[in-house]
Image 1 (tube, rainbow, N blue to C red):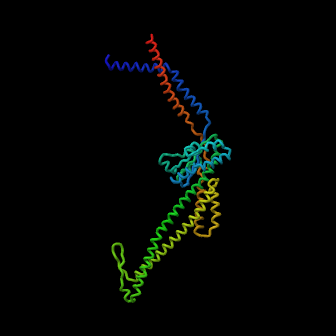
Image 2: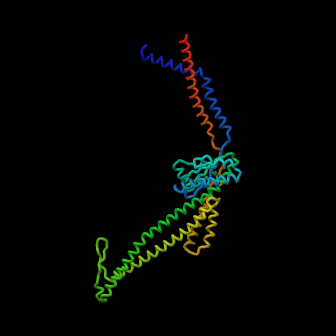
Image 3: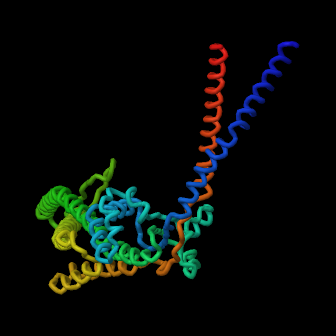
Length: 393
């Protein structure tokens, strides 16, 4: 028998040894793999079901920055405390206790979570349709939407609690969270107005210096005119620079040009002063609005209450410009209120898949590998003990 035949023969013997071990310990392998999988399957099937429903929102106009602000505010400690209070008021103490210790979005994903989506048309094109849980009657309307979408999913049990939880969370999302976003918008607007005021102050010196110079030029041109007769005046031409070259104009035109420049600079200065005072008034108004939101931040203060505050505030303003601004701002708040309603008012409640087959299969495979390893381990121990007994004899 050559070396190759001997090696092939030994491989066959080794394979037979493996099969003998597996056959000998077949009961251990069978029970060790089936029982754990069966146990996990029974637990999963007997465990109370979780249910979920998803509201679809549109026209919220949340860009990437606004969405991050929205998430930070919603999952912030202050807002979570408001949710806890409302849940307790509705007899949902178990959920209130569940979210009391929340420290961010990851801690609350299994209860309330959000997802931004492209418009439905873009989702179809990208073959990534994520709207799977919604109100069937509204699906056609959702498919026509052109604005980005926001999904809010609530997961809880039992099924009877879902509508109550949904009403609490919806009230928070649609009436309270917009107040936080408005507060952020006011801060951004205040920064923009301060920047504009700073730019006006920065340009003020240059404009006044330019005006002073043109007034001096005009005075000197008039001195030249005063020293000449009308007949000689038409013969006087003066040079002025245009880029890298020069131009000559009669004295009268030079005087008119200087006067025109002075008028323009005076109007620019006057317009800047008017803008500066307007931005200053807007900052004062902004401060009142921000103070109102800050004072009521810890309370259950809604966007509707803020709207009432604005309508009462406008009556105290006689300044037409500020009154016009407030009227425009009130309309924006009204648009926010109307846009906060979801597209899906009555979404269906679905049972959350338990993944029983997948999880039991994973447990079965792992248990099977452990059982086979244990079988070979026991076989090895028995073989070692038998060899030790032979040597002892």
